[in-house]
Picture 1 (cartoon, helix red, strand yellow):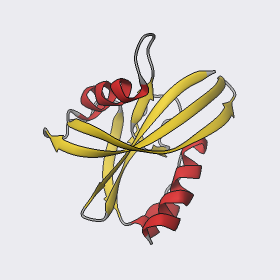
Picture 2: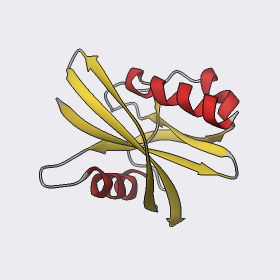
Picture 3: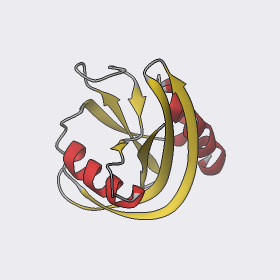
Length: 128
């Protein structure tokens, strides 16, 4: 099972979501950005590294938000999400076609990767 992290970034009541790039697995699907935990790395360290690599920004990892286990054709992942705060940096995309800041009630209008769907539901319940 692969351990993967996801960042729940909320700013002014809006949630950041990202659309996977054409050259990525599950291209076109929306997700909460993050990535795979490398050997010897904590989930929090992974999230800081992945967000810096994929979005070009620095974050502070705050509270654990939840976890989701999903069986894809390529294998099972355990997705661990944290609420994070955008500290600084300008957004620069490397693994995504686009990002959007959306209202929580709008989350259901996007085609999310299956492992992220549980977090969509939880955010809508918490923030609406």
